[in-house]
Amino acid sequence: MTYPPSGQPSADPSSADSRAIWSWACYDWANSAFATVVMAGFFPLFFKQYWAADLAATESTFQLGLFNAAASLMVALLAPILGAIADQLGRRKGFLLIFAALGALMTGGLYWVEQGQWQIAAWLYLAGVVGFSSANLFYDAMLTLVSPRQWMDRVSALGFALGYLGGGLLFSINVWMTLSPDTFGLVDASAAVRVAFLGTAAWWLLFSLPLAFFVHEPTTTRPIGLSALGGGFRQLRTTLRKFRALPQTFLFLVSYWLYIDGVGTIIRMAVDYGLAIGLESNDLITALLLTQFIGFPAAIAFGRVGERLGPKQGILIALGVYMGVTLFSATMDAAWQFYLLAVIIGLVQGGVQALSRSFYARLVPSNQCTEFFGFYNMLGRFAAVLGPLMVGGLTLLSGSHQAGILSLLVLFLLGGYLLTRVDLAAGERAAAAFRGEE
Image (tube, rainbow, N blue to C red; front, side, top):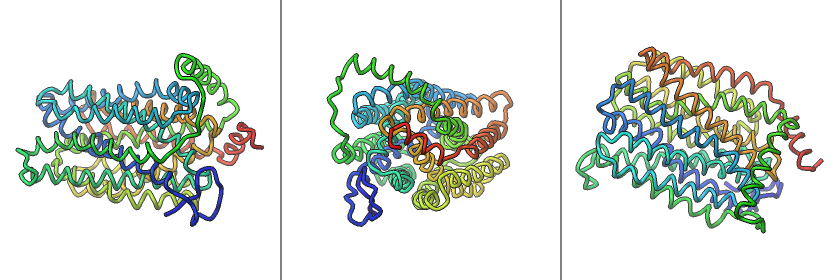
């Protein structure tokens, strides 16, 4: 698979140097280890069964949702400011690597947390999520550096596809470790899970290196220090005013804020929900592996859907599937049903994320994309505040995990409706005029 070099609109990809694109996409392979092994897989499982085993099931669900929400709130508050500063300095890659290192180190720290120390585990997890999510702000914004606009759906999908493959590969090794710890010289499954946290940290750091070496930013002579900080805040205030000239961009952001809430909550809370309704941990982990490996080709396919039908239609298809999944999950009581949902989610999860990123990239001025992606990530994180709190809070109040999960329907419905009101062509024209290209 080849693509035209960054900034060149050639329709002939066969002669392109695609090293920057593949190096950029490799970071998805790197950080998806955290999203899969830690966020979706072992952390909620280990939290409920090992670190917080003395808490009631509803209480541990609430605590997990609370710390997820707190991490997301911190990133939401930081994202637009960090994005503005990065645009002032022209150093997106440097910021990405700093936050990736933070996330990896906090993940590795989970290895030393002992049974019953759920507060320490939760705080390390919170810091890991802050590192992961903040790094993603700069990673998403770098899409415009490595890909011309007409290839963004496909390049964005490539990143997510490699993420599913890489995360799934490491996760499958970790699952093997937990099922057969003797093979790896480990005492028991608990030791295997703790080693998995160390392995995830190492994987994340190692596969960040291609981006560090082969993705280049334009050189800048802008100063580093308080002047950059002040310039970042001034640019942030200016950008808030600019949304008045970019109404389609703003409307998409509101839509994204709502529907990605549901998507992110399902990713973070699925294992906890399965445990709460009595499913076996081995079945849940195997189902997550299914999602990862199905997500690899499905994300690539959704990139083609975005090119053929348009990214908006692709996102709407995925949201319809998510609404069906939410309704079905409220009646779920058997492992085979969780497997079925895992397959269905794997078909659309990477697609809705990839097309959302490339859709938004079309709607922002290219010379300020990091700052605008700061708002994109800020709303994504605010969504991740609301969703886990809704699920955890309603579960605690009602005593029913089904009531909590059904609350996500509102988010998919409202987000999908607002998305139908977004005029992509008008948004692209406004963004181009904003850059002075018309």
